[in-house]
Structure formats: structure tokens, C-alpha cells
Amino acid sequence: MRIKAAFLAITAAFTVAPAQAQSPEPAALDTEITAVLTKWMAENHVPGMVFGVVKDGRLAYVKAEGVQDTAQKRPVTPDTLFRIASMTKAFTALSVLKLRDEGRLALDDPADRYVPELRGWTYPTSDSPRITIRDLLTHSTGMVTDDPWGDRQQVLSQSAFTAMLRAGVPFTRAPEMRHEYSNLGYALLGRIIANVTKAPYRTFVEQRLLTPLGMSASGFDVLAHPKDKRAIGYRWENDAWAEEPTMKDGAFNAMGGLEVSAADYAKWLGFISSAWPPRDGADTGPAKRATVRQIARGANHAALFHRYATDGDKQCPGATAYGMGWRVITDCNYGTVLAHGGGYPGYGSHVMVLPEYGAALFALTNRTYSGPSQPVWDIAALLTAKGVLVKRVEPVSPDLAAFYTAAQMVWTSGNIDALQGRTSMNFPMDRTAANWAKVLAETKAKSGTCESITPISAEGAMSGTFTWQCEKGSIKGTVLLAPTKPITLQSLGFAFEGKD
Image (cartoon, rainbow, N blue to C red; front, side):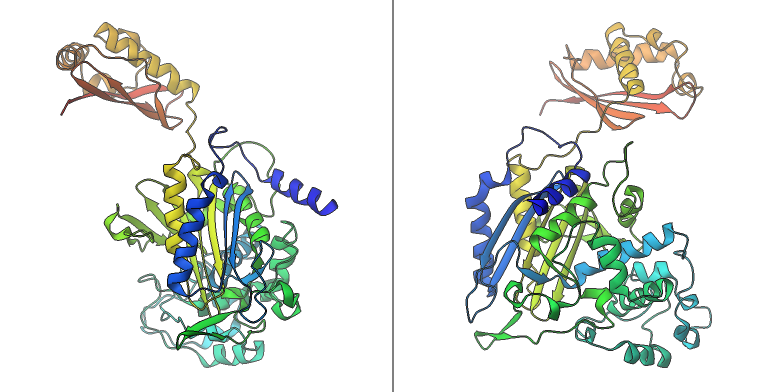
């Protein structure tokens, strides 16, 4: 009972108001979700898998399929431990940001200030900037992408890692020219954390992130974890599963060494997603909400993104950039998405966080590089289409509401008298009162009678849009307030769209 009470307390601490209190639970779609998962597992020869949905700060749904090991055929459960590979990088990045908050480092500090072995490195050009901590966080170091080499460095000893760094590494280009994924770069962040804290990297993560979140089953010393709780890792070759060797904790743990259960990982995602939206109130997590939100600030190396879903290349494209331990995607429907995969000998995983929905989805598997991004994104689409996940509505500020009322009066009266003394200095310069009356009359003639009582949709505290259904079409309207005190109106729009 004490464990359950502690979990409920942790969940409550990171729960914010639901996006829509009456939305159905994911379990209502259990049959459809299970079909997606089992089909994908069969097609990809995956022995075991656990899938979860975190909604409004809690593990709202979990589905375990298959086995932890192929010999004894122990079934996967929500407590089964999986290595999450590169999804570890999110913990590393937040640890660096915590140290920044504590004044123990700065993101634009050169990395060699904290790792002296880097000071003798030969850069590719004489005008190359020295690698900074920010470069390491955003994979902008100029070092070559190192999958799958980096995955096999997990067991490297700290002394061997020191010797590697002292010898220097070849560059593929000058730092800060483009994004190129580097496991070595995140291993370096682990060394920076260790040198700054004067303790092993894993100690900081376990004591400052895992323990406060109640992630008591998770950690880096996988050989010390109960064997009957661990998912054994396999690769698929010669039409059979072959067991991968279990890699012990080593010098590259900061890039991919964490092992978690679904029950534990949900606590992490509940904490991460609780950072949105910005708000007043207690800030009790292991890192400040504003600090967590900084992980979504992608580096200036954006690229075209096609969804990982089935037929994702035929769906609306988006943009992606690497933030800090997360891929940051701008999606036409979901808005901001934080996503990351994890590929490792014996394991594959994927996570997506939907900050604007207060939700996150994840899947963990025990087959080499079997990244389950497709089923995660397919199920996200299913849950949004069925109203299980609902985008949070931006609250309408009192100022925006007041000026929307004035906009309705302007439309009804056919003049801007209701705005007298309430506009910014540009407003009468951009269109005179006489021309406002003329444009309003012309627009009303085109639209016919309109239902002008639809609520305004806020885009922020200072701007919003509205749509009125009219006799001959619709009015698409905008209200934009000015950055003045007192608040004034800088722009108002009534655009008519005829019926097809």
C-alpha cells in the first residue's frame, strides 16, 4: 500500500488539467490497439513488446505482448525491464540543463573546459569553432554519425574512453555546420556530468531524476537487476532468434545505457508532459517546468519530416530539428511533437510526446533495432481520430474576449465606433473610419446574414481567430492586440469565403 500511495502522490504532482475531461479512455480501443501491435510484431519478428499511453500525467493504458525470453517464455508485463537505448539521451540532456540551472556549467561553454583530453584535438579547419556543450546536446559537433559503432561501445571502460579522447577523433566536417547524430557526443556529455559532479554519470541521473520520480526499478547497472524481470535481447537472423550478449554498464552509458519498465517510464513521461502549458503554481518536479520546455528548442538545422506512420510519406509533411535529447517535430495536426527512437543490440524502442494534448505514447521491444515507431504513430492517429486524445484549448484572455465583443459590435453596426479610443496608433493609419464602413458594407453584401456568436479561438493571450457561418459562405476573422499598456487593438480582419 505504501508503494501504491507513493506512486499516486508522484502522479498527482505532475498531473495538470485534462485536455477534455469527458474524453474516452484508451482502453475503449483495446481491440484496435492490440491488432496494430500484434500485426507489427509478427511482421518484424519481435519476441516481446510493451506499449503505453500516458494521459494527463498518468499511465492511462498499458499493453504487454509476447515474451521476455524465448526459452522459458516468461510473458512480458508492465514491470518487465527493457533497455531503451538512445531514449536515454533525454535523461542525459535534462541532467545537463539541471547543472546549468545550478550554475555549474553554461551551454555555450567549450566542452574542453570540462574534459581536458579534448584540448589537444585537431579540428578540420583553422577557423573551426571549439565544440561547445550545446553542440554536443544538439548533435552539431562535426563528428560523423556513429550508429552502429557507438552502440557497441557501451561496455568501454572509463580508462579506455579517456585514452580514446586523448588520442583525438577524426571529424567529418567543421562543428556547427549541420546536424549529424553522434553517440560519441552524448558519451562526452556523460563525462562532462561526471567531471562536474565528481561522481559517476549514472549517480547523478539515478539520484537526481530517477529517485525523485519514483523510478525505483530502473537504472544503468543491468546485471544487478532481477534476471526474471529483464527482457532478454534478441536479433533475428537465419529465420530464428539469436540471443544478444548483455552489455554491462560502461563509459557510453549516457548515450544509451538506461533500463526501465513501462510502469517506471510512464512516470518520466508524465513529468515531461506536465511541463506544458506554462502556468502559475508550485514547481515541484526534479527539474523546473521552464527547463523541461527548453528541450523543445530545436537546433538551427531543420529538415523535412515525414511521419513514421503507415503511409507517412503520403500524409502532411512537417519539419524536424534536434532539440536537447529529443527530435522536435512541427506537425500539421499535432503541433509540436517530441519524439525519439532507441536502437540497440537486443532492443528497439520509440517514444512520442504530444505537449499540446497532454499525452505521450511509447513502445519497448526486445529485438535488435526493431524501432516500433510505426505502431506508435499509427495508434496516436487512432486515438486522436476517436477523441481519446484531444488537443488542449488555449484559454481566451479577458482582453482578447473584450476586443472580440467589440469586433462583433463593429460587424453589427457597420462602423468602428465601438473601437473609439481603444486602437493602437497604426490602426487609423492603416484604414480610415470611412473606408472601414465601405469595406464592411461590401463584405456584408457578399456574405449575407451571419451567425456572429461563435466563440473566438485564442492563439495566445493577444491574438485569436473566429469563423462565422453565413448565408452565402463564411467569415474568417482575426483579432490582433498591440503590445501596449493599456491594451489596444492593432489589427482586425473580416475575410469572406464563398461556398463551393
